[in-house]
Length: 473
Ligand code: AMP
Ligand code: ZN
Image (cartoon, rainbow, N blue to C red; front, side, top):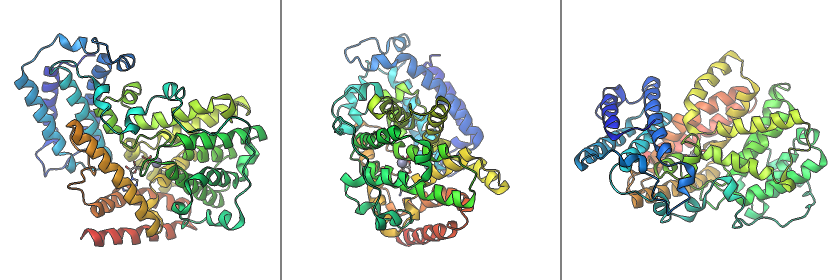
């Protein structure tokens, strides 16, 4: 379906009647309006995909990319009016009811803007626009391309011996929630990550020796695929792996039969790969710039699809294929669980997930899949539950990354995303909002699954919240 700008205008006029579009100050966002907007977003998305199929984006010399749009010419006043209306909608996003709704609305605005700009004038070379951006964004590509490139620093060929188990003191320290991942040298992170996986008896019960050797190489290669981002680095991936490792152990103590060995393995590896090749910008940025990854994945969970697809593509290299030595049914389940878990880290699915998860926690009917997804999502945003000295370093990293995205958006003339404007964002208030609306709710649910450790984790979170509240006051 092609969406002509006038259709967009009239759809947009209709959107104005929805409650979320009332002038700023009123309530923004309900499940219903989110759905309507998602539908609208879908219309725009289909149109965008229709004019820019993935192949065309890689052909910079092509003049055909916007052919379908050329048949409809509108006055520049109409176009400017529509852009202004989109801008008004964007400036009201701060009133969104929650982060998931806001991100939904923001993506919808981005596709509307793209729809208008396609009809505005001469063909815009999207890739040329991107080349002005930081290297990580420019070079981040779908796995089939990325895997044939030689830019990544990967360990040399040959069957490497397994690293020795973690030594006594470290082996105990990583089992505590106060562990400081920042003190580990970058070169030691793969060994630490693999060592923590190997602490789980499930790993050696499920994986034969050949798989373990390949998994060790896989950990190293995946590690080399992470970029040196201020937050989304391999250090974050290892932090999340250590986090889920503790949570899995505590859950197994509380409910020994809930998870199978295979599920434990899948959850540990999913944590390690969950942000593979992260370019340091959020999904909305990739959608707004029509990055090749956004086109490939039809604007749906773009980053999450990229992380798990890249990891799975790496795991299909013979020397890294730790999955194929397993029986076929186990291979299928491992892949399925890992894919589902990594896709579950998409923030836009957070609210529906939380609703169901909290209902099931209360009814004590949490499934293994829900428990693993909650633990991965919780570990992913666990930095505010750590000791303040550890947490504060992550805050510095994430804000640096957010602000770099804001700078790129400013360069491109795009609206600056929430929390990304270095000129106006209050870091302390940002942390108060993050803890209150995202971190606290999921951790309250997780805490009920691990009654022996939950209260202590929630207490640390509360202390950190008070700290940032005081700074924000
Ligand atoms: P992921 O991108 O998979 O790492 O998902 C976690 C997301 O949570 C990040 O992308 C950030 O947007 C957000 N996040 C994590 N830690 C913080 C923090 N301390 N402050 C604000 N946002 C955070
Ligand atoms: Zn993450």
